[in-house]
Length: 85
Image (cartoon, rainbow, N blue to C red):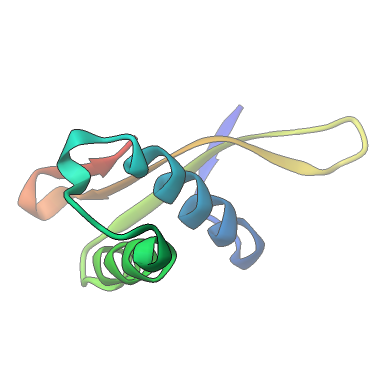
């Protein structure tokens, strides 16, 4: 397994999995279901787009040469904040 920055094709996985897991979190607050996707994507984008935010994926390569993401983290090292693991 290796670490790297995500490719453009991997960001939808990051947004989707983060949103699904956050929905079950007690810290997610009260967001109407019809607004969930828009709200979570806007929040994740705001965090990811901040200067100094680091998104790292852990991946493996299949025998066919396909990169498979096994996990990811979103952090702001300068602020000592880990947003997601």
